[in-house]
Length: 159
View 1 (tube, rainbow, N blue to C red):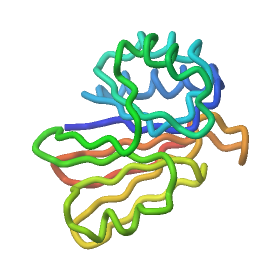
View 2 (view 1 turned 45 degrees about the vertical axis):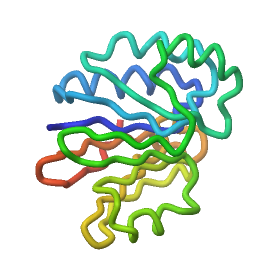
View 3 (view 1 turned 60 degrees about the vertical axis):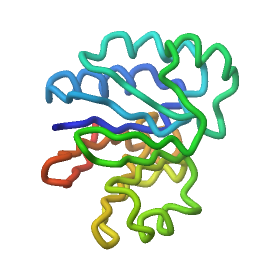
């Protein structure tokens, strides 16, 4: 099962749309957003996804009630833990406890954002993924990730 992962869109509609187009072209079956949509209007683009999505609130997400409403309940407080394709996934925004979560062995996949820096690595049997910043505001490079939950591998893709 292929999943798309993005974070830190920060209202950049151009790159958010490119990310959604990439995920649709790659036929991802699920998309996960690791926070910092920023404004509810960004979620209008998510209706163009050809798959279900889930996400969490980041530290820059302002109008949480409207974000929750516009997402139709698909955005959650962190940490958000769920099972997909028999893999236990935890999604965080901040990076402070990522290594401890992976080291615990309780999760197959740890997803985070916040740093705007792409990161793919394994700690024991846990895959850690930070897709970097989709919005490109901080470092000028828009990136997302695609992960294969059967192979437990991921790649960073520049938009």
